[in-house]
Image (cartoon, rainbow over all chains, first blue to last red; front, side, top):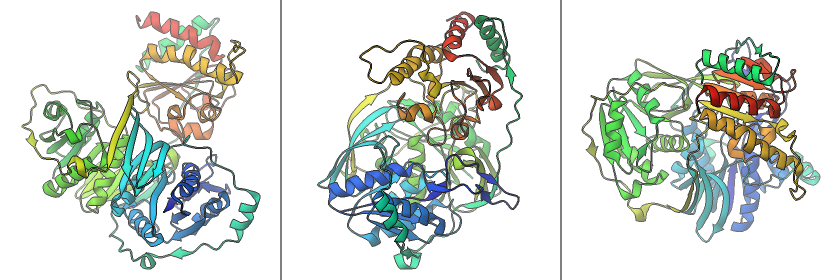
Length: 257
Length: 339
């Protein structure tokens, strides 16, 4: 059975991202990278596809800019990459889920779908859970280690806000994986060369036989966060004790202790 | 118009952050139904009433004693279909995020997650939420259908408890039987007594500079820098955290260097936090870190490099080596706070 993972291109994590005068998001001439959480899901997909005896397939739902992330994925060693055309507004996660589920069905014979923990651009993980519901598959989130996958079941360690769980789940399943689950490999030289020549097939909703629901959420506007107006006060003093005492006085005055 | 609030429970108690969701719900409507699943559901519904619920639906079934997505989502979706609330709210904890997303997908409704501001404009719900790890703010709306929203922790202030308020909870049956639930919990290792980064009013974080521990690593320590950093977190920052009743955090640089596990990471690929007080120790303040903590109410920077970018965000700065200053600060705080 195959493993499918989803990725997208997002601005380099060190880039200064801002809203320009026409209300669009820009990150200057900084490069895009794969969504930082997806490096782990891409690596895990390569490993688990071998366990399940299938291919590791990567899909991006969105505009052409996401081809970059798909090429990076191919260079890492994913077997196949596809892009699905989507509505221009990426914040409607239900539309994503309907298209993603349809892509998984089109690929066929899929045992496991792996998402990174979150998409940094839209700032959400809703699309992963919603894809599981649209497939009607089991959902296991925040996986920190896959203990076994195969024979119709999955055993994983997951981190919750209260501690660590070991759970078993039936396959097929959708999971989200955490940073630290593996050590993502770097693309090889041969991989990069092969990926640069690859043509990425593009599927439309029609190709997938997906009926897109009406728009459920609407983007009103992007804004830059208000500048943090802070006047920094450096605490001075003749000794550590004096500085500590002064700092505590300030914190008590500010009522944060 | 009515609001349904999912009250998160753990081992028979209400997750205190659910009070924030009740307060946000009351800000939208005077009809607020608490949905409580799990052990002690009726008692927790009574507590929810004191914090703003005007009605409650409860299900105290063994299949729901531990949170699992499938049985919870099946029941929440059924309640949404029957009650047709205008809005469904929960706090954006790991469980709250996945549960409301799943239920929204089940009924083909819109969801906005991790929202920091919420207003109702006639039938339209408008929300503000961070995107690009807090570098951008997005303003979004849901204009029709049931509106699902998860709220960023600590973004909404709970109401004061009203001891006179009460509800008559309506008991409902679960939707899935144990045999129909595809996930089984085999083992659970609880971390007790730890304040979570998302709930903490005070956070103390350490950065890459924590490896500059003046203590010598023992000969059998393996990697000396890692030993020094771990000792710094445990013997210098943790006592400050304990004195303040806060939570411990770290920068990505410290996590990537293997100094501390990933679950402590604050920043772009870690947790986004908004405590009242954030104390950054030996953290330079890379843009990735700032994205996760810039919404803290008050930031204190302790760094021996007075040029570190973190000082630009800080209200108060102490230009000292954390190893020299933090133990003194902790001792002084213990005296002043009477601990």
